[in-house]
Length: 179
Image (cartoon, rainbow, N blue to C red; front, side, top):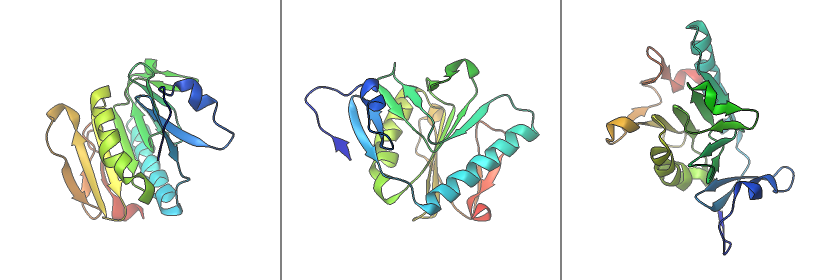
């Protein structure tokens, strides 16, 4: 849900939110975030654990993060908290989060986040330079995988299919096996 204001919101407005209130900033518009449900958190946590285990088992140097984790995009005009972010360029990281596009972002769709995940964030992530974007939708039991450099329609996987991670060669995740 977007909050309207005559002027654009800024990163300072994010930090000025009352304790416990979360929001994302997309090109000057502030979007409140509802707390995630149990299934959302369960799936996001299991995906994160699978990715972390894969990276550790292969001595990877990239870093995965799970929400809430700050990602500052488009020269700090946008602030998001993707469910999962994987960053290869560790120079983008500081104590506040990631400054610049993560290489892989996974969003788990909640009833209140559909429009944001399927449309607003897709455009934002593509424009910011995210290489790979997954939209995992528990209600539809599908995962849409966008390989941004290919600039094509997404590949659609069922939760029963192995979903290959383009930037993490050799990693295939079957969502149904995680739940």
